[in-house]
Amino acid sequence: MFTFLRAEARWIFAGFLLTAFSGFGQTFFISQSNAALRDMFALSHGGLGLIYSAATLTSAVVLLQLGKLVDRVSTRRAALIVAAGLVVACLVMAGAVAVWMLFAAFFLLRLFGQGMMTHVAMVATGRWFDAQRGKAVSLVATGFAISLAILPPLAVVAILSLGLRTLWVLGAVAVALIAMPALYLLLARERAPKGHASTIEAAAPKTSWQRAEVLREPSLYLLMLSVLAPSFLVTGVFFHQQHLAEVKDWPLATFAAGFPVFAILQTGGSLAAGLLVDRFSARALLPCFLVPIGIALCLPYWFSGLWVIVALMALLGLGAGVHTTLSGAIWPEMFGVRYLGEIRALIFSAAVASSAASPMLLGYLIDLGISLQLQLAVLGGYALLASVVMGIIQPRLSAIANDRITPTRMSESLP
Image (cartoon, rainbow, N blue to C red):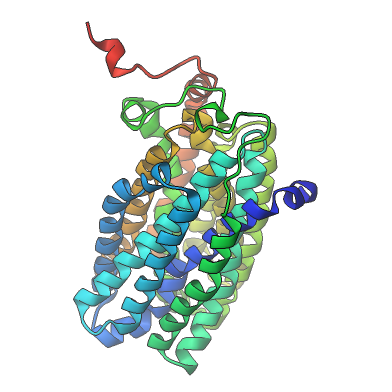
């Protein structure tokens, strides 16, 4: 792993920066502003969740088309465009004085932060690396864990000492002065997978599917039951973390201290998954990665001790770490790399839409008096059931990955 990292440091670090700075658009960072935003705009849990979910869903629709950008321009140009968009997003949040401006800020943060920063990182890594794709994706994904470990505590301190608006101005400054110059230098040239020709078409031996062909494959929809679940489940916990701490009588500072635990297990899970993907395959891990998430979500329903915070964050982090590596490796493994940008834009838009649903849905159920603990337990049961489904469809996924099932081109079906 260390030899590989030294040899490929330029591209790995570029991907790492993209995932790390995506944190400004991730729920774990934005949600630190929830209490201040509810007071500022006189919103309920459900009201704020509705705005956040609507903005996230809108970003998913736009991402469906904007995600094709990485198929049409260089990685450096795509990364710089997206980073500039994130700077604007942070400034809009800093200056928001009306609900419509809050919606715009959420939309831009989710589109350029959570959405496109992650999308560019994972598409580029999936193309740059072939035989060692699992290790590469897992190393790039450590940016999420570092961001999660650092940004929420800093946000709490900044809001208390400097105020909400200053926090977001500092975010814009960090992206503009750190991320953008570094990405400009690191991405001065593209990397071609070693042992293959430099063109994208020759970078993988399997058939490359187009988006329309992927949409006609029935197993995609079962696969998405599992792959999209963490976006919904983890976002729901993070967005309503303050309410969960309140109803469980957990000190908010103690709950926030669980984020480093999440980050450590996320990193470990991601790196371990990278090694396993290269040895076995990404699809082989699909029946396993939701199990720790399912168990974690059931814990607050049955137990109330402070140890639950550690167990909850550890299990969520482990599952999220494996998921991060899988989400970068499964799509090129299944459908090739030629149209990876448009395919992953489709999947990632669906994941963003999934993450849009949970803040609104869980928030309104809270407003209706349905306990968050019960909601999480039901969702935990879903995660465990989805794991069983992934085991059942393994033969079909293996046939696709090994080119025993190939797409039917529209021209081939014409008389």
